[in-house]
Image 1 (cartoon, one colour):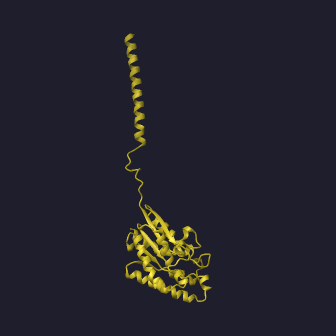
Image 2 (cartoon, rainbow, N blue to C red):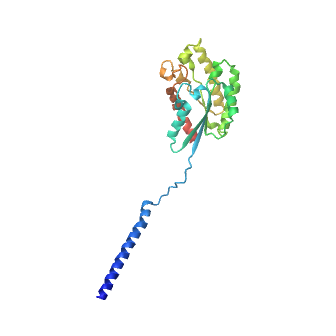
Image 3 (cartoon, rainbow, N blue to C red):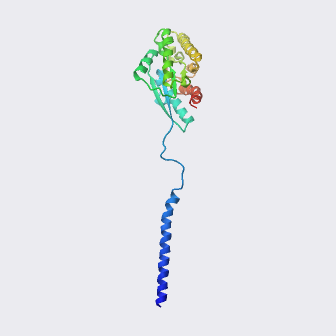
Length: 249
């Protein structure tokens, strides 16, 4: 009897010990099952950010359209869709009514950095509208080009110059004494800018023809009867986007 009792006790102790061992193994293995090997480094949050800089006047700041409707913002959003693995930032120096002189003065005051990946420049309509001497534009447009290149890490291939829209093809323009003169004078401004850029290998994009559809396609004109609408700016971006993508690749 004593031997049987002893054997029985040994069996109970052995079963209990095996049960505890299995239980311990289960608790130890669960974390390994819930945390499989993963090569992803969750501490690495570095993301490449492309910096865009837009210089200009009312056509750049987007007079009479929403903030997300102006062409620099539409371009930024379109680039974000094209490069969805990168981030994009946008800085703007522009104001309604600015001439080339006003823009130069504002740049000198702001003193921007020189690390932008893409710079756009659209300026000159107020030189024409305010009847400034054309020679002023001839002298100051090159200054602005030089500054734009500086802001783009001294790389002229990162610059896009946008032609001046033609406000003669708007209700406001048609109310002026000589709408035809507006178009003729703006052609002179755009011809000078295009020639200057092409001679130096700087990208010049013509969008003026889009704005000259404003009388027959009234949806291209903003509610103020003067500036481009969000739709018109989207058409600008259709031309700018493939060029900008190429410059950032």
